[in-house]
Image 1 (spheres, rainbow, N blue to C red):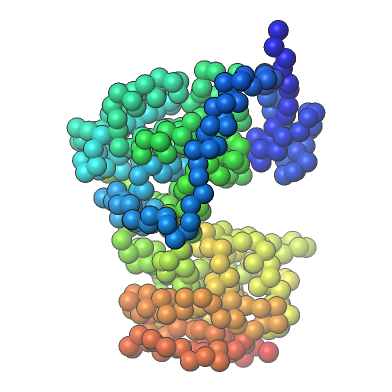
Image 2: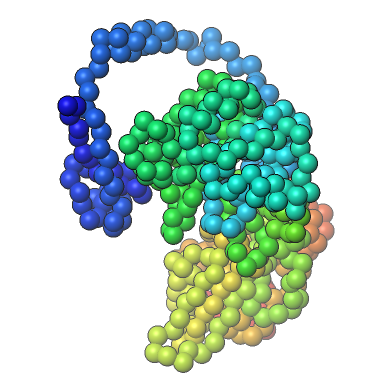
Length: 464
């Protein structure tokens, strides 16, 4: 009788421990430990010989002798998808796409699969959650016709590999990795050992055959891709499809890319015809802007290498309770608290008796500090009930002493603001001269938040 060994693995961070615990000692999550039963075997002499032989076949090579002939990428006909991937699909790469249920992951990949099948050969779409008829119904609704797109409903990885060896597709799509299982792994689909083993075998298939593999991954309630954290280390690229379910815009964000820039973003709009790319997202996000409304400010933010103009709205109102509320939507709560404290301490605004609500229009989420100044001006504009001039955009990070700090990639931000039609931009005052200012654009340079408020709200004279 073979000996077995039971260990416990956290489904959130893949930490392995010897005994079951209610809370993971690594990530601190509760009820994430899953039992993994492994058979303990001694390696046979053949296995030892094979392992030693494989080690001798891999030889060191001088860095200068390595061939760097550029491998041609497979260009995706959807330009926003192409941007996020870094210019196209690298043959033999493995790409993981995550997102909330119903956000549009399968819709986007079906559209991309049909486009790529027309240009790059056979594409095999494997679904473990929908039948072939359901996928066909979606394709008909989207108006998709592609002779080289093959559909397969299967969750057994061995059977999937048999069809791959028979069809020899250029691209393989797995929907989803959590429903796929390997017969020789003694655990249910979706558990840590299954997800890790299936992803490893798909990686081996991609690297050995040159087939590009897309995997759709479920996400947890915290927004992370379900399964072991090692899943994101195995793949070459990790993409997240984000967006407010009640808004039509979707953002395809790259958080890891071995073949391109990280934090790149592609913008799509969910319509009846499927996911439609938005070539000029700044205009789309500002299309419904109400001009000269108190509490509304345009921020110029960067998403990867792309500048975006977004509207930040703020509303202050006297609190009806003992503790004033702070409600952010699309911005970080800690940044909102920091900016509120700076306005109260440095500018004398009595925000301790005001509820503050901040919202980013379009369902976007802004993380970079360059939007601090726009948020602060929006709060002050609502507090004084004075509108910010409609032709002003705002760029700048705020420090704890109220100073405005420089931001990266300022020329690109200024060009985007000028292209949309803004005539004035509030920017940090720096020692270096700002070059490449677009024609017709005036810069309002400010050292601190008091200078910025005097520039955009001249009727108010806050202290500072």
